[in-house]
Image (cartoon, rainbow, N blue to C red; front, side, top):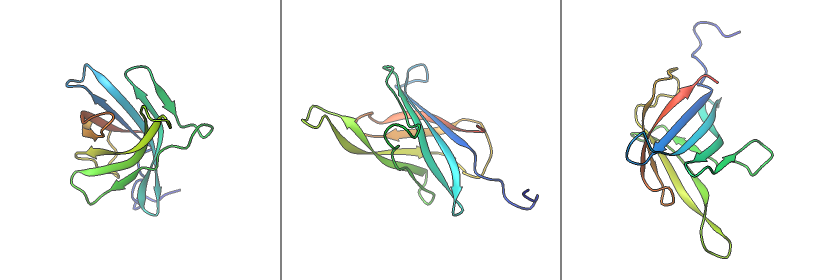
Length: 136
């Protein structure tokens, strides 16, 4: 059992939603499980859902999730990865960088309030959004 003097563990999840122009037009949603490893938060993507009904769940039985990395020194903090996106090539897809800018994100602060975020990616375009930490 943890003593009162120990810091709180990292939140259990991070939910992000990105939209086209206004919150009434959600374009993309992502959910991450967050665990602490070597004193730093580690993000494991659980799903990505798009406004066209497409959804990819990373449940351990399908393809492995993208490897996300938090840069705690950037301002705002950034969560970045490389993702496979569809194209018209013979392979049918290619990899691109994707970055989520997290304005006001503090990993060890337990709060379920939404905070500003933005998504930077060629395929999904640059989208405004918001994220919140979750307890489950």
